[in-house]
Length: 181
Image 1 (cartoon, rainbow, N blue to C red):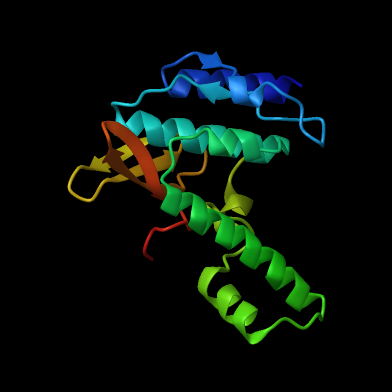
Image 2: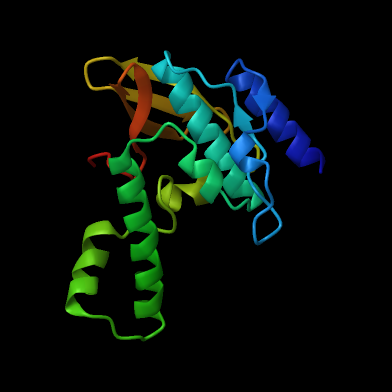
């Protein structure tokens, strides 16, 4: 419990905003948990959009919170959401293959195209993050739209691509999702 409060406090401070509960995340999901942390929305600051999303995403992942409602409410492009979902689907298909189940050639090709190690965004890097990891700003390249975040505990860097759509900053890529190697 202390871990949850400490991480939530660090998260709120790291993005210079107070935590607020998202109206969409207030309901209870099938597992009895929903995302209960959404940080102050800053639509005019690409760095804050990247920080808010990644830190809240990692917090939800760490706590085992079902993030489907929270995920849909985030400033993400439709392309990002599509690739993220395809990576999740490819991971499930990969697990079937590892279990010895046969899948179609089309599904095998889908797995080759979208499969990532372990989870979308962080991939296998998630194993190297600390349970108290919090990402901070490392750099922002206005030309490419890449915000580089750095975990303050481990030094692991994570690229996040942001684009401005109709006056709002949206995430177009993050980690393994829609970021070229």
